[in-house]
Image (cartoon, rainbow, N blue to C red; front, side, top):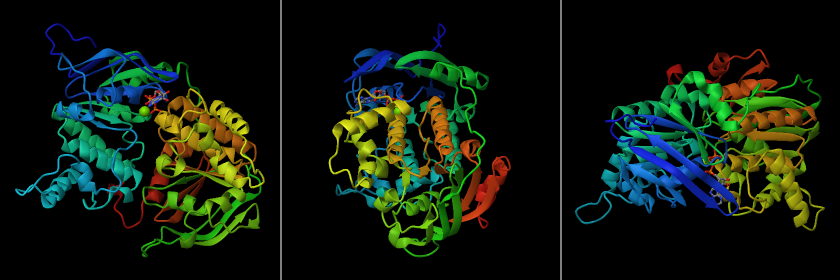
Length: 516
Ligand SMILES: Nc1ncnc2c1ncn2[C@@H]1O[C@H](COP(=O)(O)OP(=O)(O)OP(=O)(O)O)[C@@H](O)[C@H]1O
Ligand SMILES: [Mg+2]
């Protein structure tokens, strides 16, 4: 990748970048090259230092050592605003929108168009926002407060914001981890258009299947070091995985043959009303999860997967109706506390909103829910807490300096693992997992699948919602498909295909093109 004599310098080149945080060397001689009109995919395990380098490039904090050159000229941005002025725009992994502001306000934040009287020109602001939203096929009112949007839509607004900045270099840190298939298609179309306009991009992802459609070059980090840099080739996939995780990965989905036992969770005529009225979020769902069984729940965005799981967990008690039985006994679950006491735990989808308290330590987060449930424990034993956390950290291979580290300083994938650890610490009989591997690297994914397999073999009942079809197909004993809050199909392991599942997931009145 060193330019031949006479080549113009790359758009961006970072070399020898190092950065230490208390207790961890996040980067040790990392680097990356981006060319105009091309996309460099950046790969590496959770905690490899990918987001740290992006923060350095975007001027969030300075490196301890190393050089960055833009168009061949050295630069050192002291703030994101400076980086932005030089044409660099970043879509952060952990979303950066201001929840109380509207979609339009977020998009133009700091650059609001003004009227001749110096007031914010709302009319133009909304019109400008509508233009970028249209480019992304987003049908949302620019006046909607961002805090009311789902994670995926918020991610699209973040992308709209970056587009409106007219960047020459765009950094996308795991942009698709919360997007639906349709939104991913749209994003890829936008990426191709940006390349045609000469925009250079850095694209971080754990979904290797995306790469053949967008990647031109590939860079791989391992433990903060640059270990591979070359033109992308789809044939080198196994090689990339080996460089990332340092070994070959055998079967990604280790699911043992299972013989489900008695029903642990039974729902009959389960429904969740929409707060504003109208069509219910979940309508007349009857299902059972048996001991030792992994049941996969698939559905497109808005199908009601998350609402179903949250309602079972007691989060929408006033809107929820229907019969719930746990291990055969009638259960009244009006709150997460009731759910935990009945032996149900949930690892939620939105780790920032409902999963974790980022300012608290790993140990505190992990034991939080289980403490609630164990009402006999009057005294919180810090030592016991630390020991349990240490066990979870090693079981899930959470990369952290100590279990006292603030959860907010973990890499994205490692935060996700803490969400899982927290659910497991409750030692539930039934575990509800909503998108359990979002943002998790391929090596750790395999570990989580094998953990799910272990738990099921130990007799737990597991309900997993996922928008990744290969994952659902790979780990489930049985697959239920939700569309518009109803179960539209059920497949036994082996009887399901991607096509059949997708077909059942498309609501009848919507044209299939809307999902492609
Ligand atoms: N502000 C911080 N304070 C302390 N440690 C930090 C901070 N930011 C990052 N780290 C640590 O630096 C290391 C690299 O983290 P980084 O977020 O760059 O990983 P990543 O490659 O983006 O991983 P992921 O794929 O999980 O997002 C991790 O060990 C992380 O805990
Ligand atoms: Mg990251």
